Image 1 (cartoon, rainbow, N blue to C red):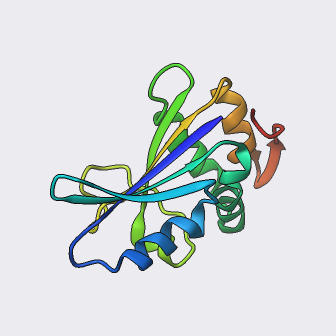
Image 2: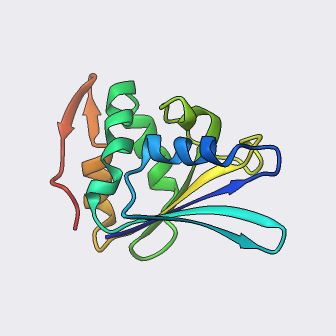
Amino acid sequence: MKVEVIAEIRPTEDPEKVRRAVLNVFEPDEVEVRREGDTTLLVARGHSYRSLLKLKEAIWRQGIQDSARSVLSRSIAGEGRIVFNLHKQAAYVGVVSFATEPNESPLGPIVFSVETSDVRGFLDWIAPRTYKGRIFYEGPPPD
């Protein structure tokens, strides 16, 4: 599994606050700040499911497994790849809020790109199906 998380650092933003927003929902193996033209990006990478444990824990703590599963299912971007966005401001306070429309996040979203050999298995692990408020089936951690 490979996970890349990108968040734009806008000129009016404190880079440490953007970093904190990302680290509240993601446990990276490596983090870098880079410039692309006039844009500054925080890029974080993880190489196993462990990097997504904070995200999973927040989804479960908030009880939004069904909503998360729905958004993530619609975010499948091809064979073995899921791309989704989180609101940066919500992540800063440790809350998962999916940004599903362009420009929905005023300061730009945190963009997650997850590559895995088993997309359905990933969904069953991070946001399992529920029935009457209870977990129907939780899959094992993905590769």
